[in-house]
Image (cartoon, rainbow, N blue to C red; front, side, top):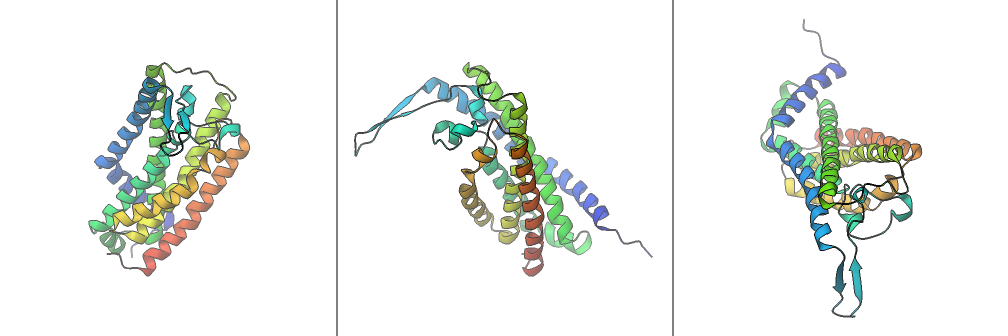
Length: 262
């Protein structure tokens, strides 16, 4: 009689399948390319524009839109200026959170459109292994996007001639900032996976849901992951990422159990 595989063995098998499918898909390389090129374009184009003046046609009030003063603004801001609104606070590395959410929605929706999920649950895997595997593989891809955006920011900053001086933070807090952002990515991956399991073949619906939810969370990211992040930020983001990942994994499993796979 064949020995029944336990959860860890099934998860390991599912991870191999998902990793191979993901890195054979052009989607992940398109997202990687976008995350590398976008910060270069942002920094180079805004450096040419300089400070842009906008006049309100109704009130006549004049507003000045400030560009990037140093390369680190493409990564984030320090705690004191985390709530400021402007070009630098909206067009920075936090855009990766939305790119990740869209990537997860497309990646999972394709499983339902192709009939892969129905076949998978019949002959190979259970729902919890599927959810856990998707969470892990999409998280790995999202961290890759984050790192490529950071590299693109450094390249764009060098081309634009922006200063690299560390003002109000240091290399250690910068590393904590990037690690904290990585753990927050796990929250966005889990939310997007849950909406993708709920929407199944309706890709447009999952993207609308996750972008709407992401907009609500977007303004909290600078506070959770400032450039001068410390150990406390790191622990809080790690704890939040793990709680969301585990909690929403069970929600996604419940959705898959209680709803049709088509």
